[in-house]
Amino acid sequence: MGFEIFGKRVFDFSMPFSHFEAWSTILIVTGSAFIIFLVLSKKAKQYRDSKKGK
Image (tube, rainbow, N blue to C red; front, top):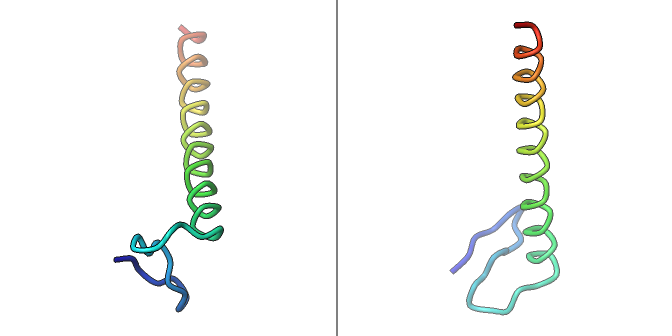
């Protein structure tokens, strides 16, 4: 079970995690969280500015 990225087999759950799988998972999760944080902070700023104008 698993799949390939650029011809390299990754996320093969029949074997223990390799360093590539561990670090790529960490980067994907933290990157997603950072992007979500940026989107939410921008929306919060827009909301605060709209309340200030009223």
